[in-house]
Image (cartoon, rainbow, N blue to C red; front, side, top):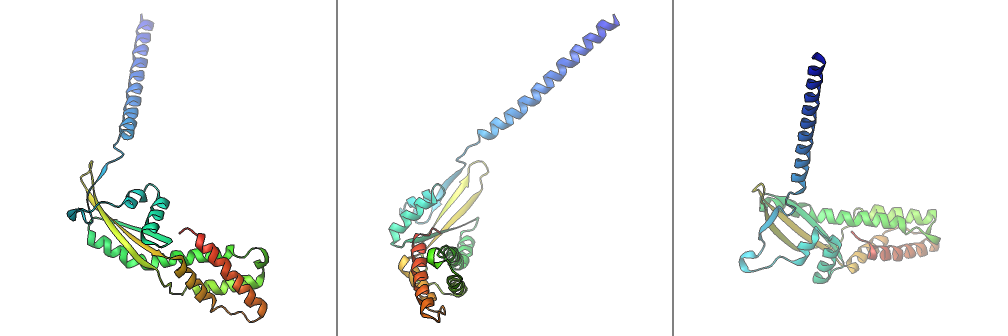
Length: 224
């Protein structure tokens, strides 16, 4: 009899463990389902620059998060400048967001250009330009370009949108500043800097011209 009671208790305990395990598993799965079923479009746009006078949101704004390269191409065609920089700032106060971005925008875009120039300077050292003398000229260029004023770099346009989270009810501004420079202006800054590079012999001067031409080609095709 005792053995039967023991076996009965054992069976009940096993069933209880199985039920609890199943409940715990179901709970976790339910949580995962709940998370995966969360609204992927939680944020809705409720305001934007010029909305009160009938302006529409530019297509490039819609492309920025989805395909930034496509957005840059569209902006480039619109403003007529080949090199485009998209800067963004987010916050609850439009004036603070705008001021913060505009304060750093010029220096940030100029630094992006200088960083690209340093990278392409090393890439220029190929073929007959892969020599210690050429490397020395590039080092001079990089040192001078790091302090150069890049004329022609300007704030082409800006835009802002205001969004609201449907789940949290919080609102924020997303401010976009578009800075740009033409290939002609970019090449002019390269030429001006190479003009300050010291090349004492005819061979070095010829090498400097080749490096300058190579740098311009590389910067023309560079993506920032």
